[in-house]
Length: 252
Image 1: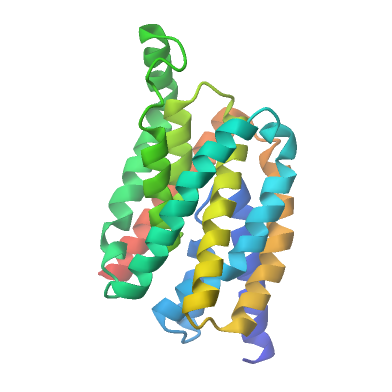
Image 2: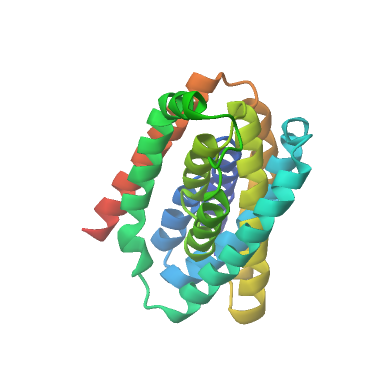
């Protein structure tokens, strides 16, 4: 690895850490860079997931104020994220490369649609009954599915989580985003331990992405907290649609 390649990976790590804290989908900054530098897709995915885990932690730390009062909810959902991440890791190491990636644009598109209609959907649900009246009954299953997806590929898991949490919970968008960042850390950290144990990451890549994502995650969280709910929603949809288009074009 020469200096130019190392710098490209480091910058991609900073960008990914920042966008993961604000929205999610940071993998779409790092994964294409690793592929362009000649790393095999599975090696790139494994190394990227391990490297982004520290950035998820600093992002969650940046949102610590918005996480206050959500400890019980976070613990319950974190268990589902953990089990999902293990499931996704097993799928990555056993299924043929590219199988799951074919349906990723569909998942991202559905998540963006949910983000756009979430305010009206939440208002409709509030008219039908108070919070807790069965509205979040399927949320743990959805968080498990998002964890499985995140443990397998990671790109845009934050967008999927935001759509699920925003639809099921009566919370401010910033508190929902904080919960998303914390659950993303659980998935990334679990998958990282799994891959370190059972796979062969490219450690120089891991170190560069980790260094970049630590900086980007903390800065991204500080900036994301200042966004108004509408602006945050607009960023989520824009990044999500861009992610879907990139993945479709790469599979053509």
